[in-house]
Image (cartoon, rainbow, N blue to C red; front, side, top):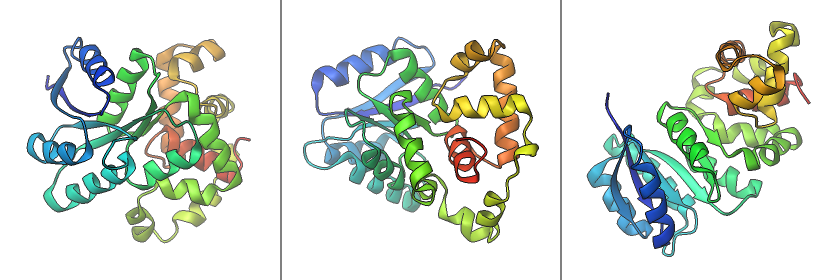
Length: 239
């Protein structure tokens, strides 16, 4: 089994060392590089090409959001497949939207529990977006107020360009396409609940939750939980 190769770009030494120490305890993870600023970080990423870069949003020489934009631009030009997980103290929707608009794959708070960080790493590695539960509700409230703005942060423009009926299909989602249980699960997804918490709330197993989530993603034509939540709010499936 191949390891998840991670690079850390964080200017605070104690934070960086703490994250590294926690991550390397897991056999499935390998920390392949570290940097304390954006300039060194970008060079490192080009050299080691990790699976995931954990990037601090408040780097001393350049905002982590701008670095993310450069990483994704570099990726397009050099086939760099590195995913970006933003790490920040900012719990406001503007920073989150800006990060995802720049191409970030996931977004975590710095005070995140290690188990949640590990989950974020795994989810990101598997190609899905992960938003810290502490700010999920704030972000999804933005979706209710301005769904087009949030949707644009998660939907690749190529998807819309290649599918002119995308928006029309999105607005045409009908509640009867989801079962009553799936709607319950979807509501909890919108509230930022993890699979384990959904299982606890609905008195079902985590395996059953995963099955419901998979069905929901398929029915909403969503790539991940966040996109499903946005589409559900936009189409009025949940409130």
